[in-house]
Image (tube, rainbow, N blue to C red; front, side):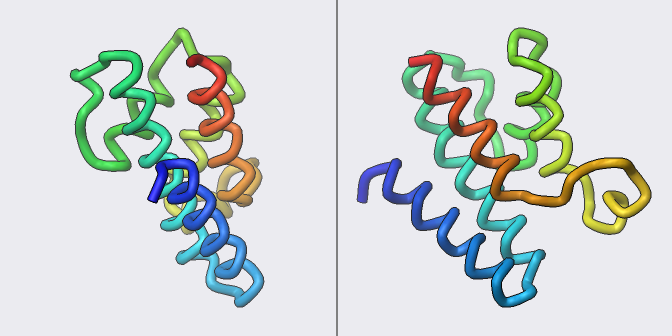
Amino acid sequence: MLWQEQIAQELGKATEGIKNGNNGLARVCARRAVAIATKHWITRSGKSDWQGDTLHQLRRIQEENTFPMEVRKAAQRLITKVTEQTKLPMTTNPISDARIIIDHLNSNF
């Protein structure tokens, strides 16, 4: 399966999770979609120091000053625990956050 199809599959699962009231599943699937895109971006860009699990990659995106603030904030929202999100002024749509990051990574190559 192509990496683009894997991303679409994960985002589809995330959409189903939201429809079924399973926001936890939606967040996990959105993170997986970002991880797939990040892995592909790492391969294309040669950033071997970006290896690591999904949360490590999201932290790197959040900290990467060369990325637009919108992308960095989307990564922050995906990292933030659901229990913390209710205390902070932020959106809680993991699918849109994943798409922001994925679109940015894909536009750089």
